[in-house]
Amino acid sequence: LTPYVIRHLSRKVDKSKEKMRNDKLSWEEFQKLLNFFSLDKQMQAYLMLSVESLGRPQEILYTKIKDYEFHDNFAKVWISEHGKEGTGMLQCIDSYPYIIEWYRMHSLKDNPNAFFFINQGKRKHYQQLKNKNINMRLKYAMKMLKIDKQVTCYSLKRNGVTFRRRRGDSDLQIQHAARWTSTKQL
Image (cartoon, rainbow, N blue to C red):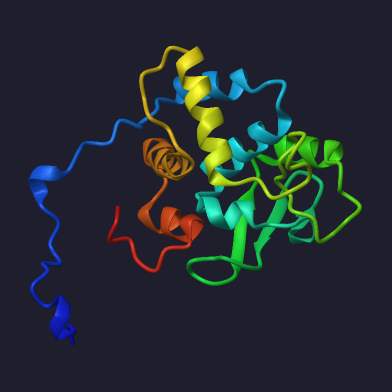
């Protein structure tokens, strides 16, 4: 039931005000972006994990050290809080070298309750890394690389889906990796 006071508002989005997203990356552009952050291992780990696991930014950024289970050539990343679909696991195979390298450099790796992705600036040292910080870094990188696209944390997930489709993954494989309840969005 719609309350009387807002019944006059329409639920439909005006199609004439929609804009086409300009955030689709080719695999080569993504590689350039990844190489741009060659000195920032944390950023490389975030980029690879978000594209491979198809995790939502808030799910990835709320992970803590204790949520990472490392094995010989893969890792299990448990979403223990802030998961849109509840708790679950993110796949980490191709991104494993980046994740393990960042983990080895992590200042707080002995603290299991510390966030895995942290700010390393002077004023907000060791606090949780936020979408805003990553988006600013991505915007700067795209400008320096002269790639005219508005890439954000969430567009990395969409690009990951596109990369998987081009690779030949089935709809069910993508649904399982992204932890979706259906394949409707595909």
